[in-house]
Image (cartoon, rainbow, N blue to C red; front, top):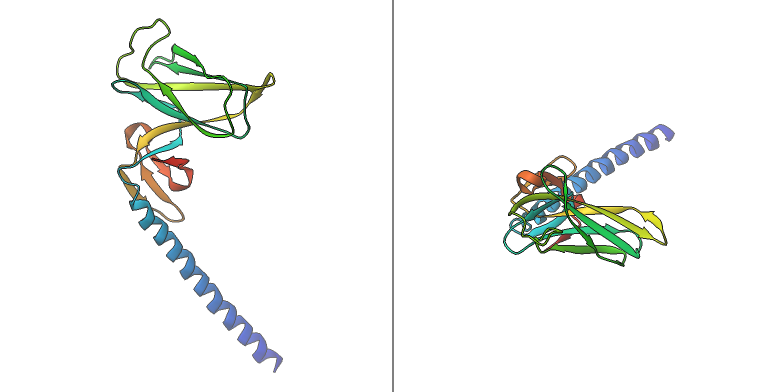
Amino acid sequence: TSQLAQISTVSGLDKLNSTLQKLVSSAEDTRSVEALGLIGHKAFVPGTAIALSGDGAIAGIELAQPVDQLKVTILDGAGAAIRTMDLGAQPTGISTISWDGLTDSGTKAVDGDYTFAVSAKQGGNDVKVDTLSFGVVKSVTPGEGDTHLDMGDKLGLISLSNVKQVF
């Protein structure tokens, strides 16, 4: 009787494991299908790229705590600083950074791809800042364990779990 009970338990565990695997697979499929709705939408994803086009450019930051001083430096292709912006105090969470395309000398920068760096302080102490690039979702690639979004040449493939905000 004891052996029959053990066999029955093992059989039940096998069925439970199989059912759980089906549920996980179904959840991954559902997540991939939901991600299709992001195609054509804009999103903040981890990165330091910022693209100037027309009247300005947008990037973002994510702060785990509020800061009393935030500085953003826009860098050209050679890594030289062309604009430094003092944005003052910023709250916890995701914030948008807008760049009007002007350099520190007041001239208009050429449309194109730039990078940015951020420094933040709270009470004189450095605070970690997660930088966010702004891009358009071009396509979705389902993958084993995660779905990836194609955000173009500059940002590349981004894991769906790394998307911070969608517009």
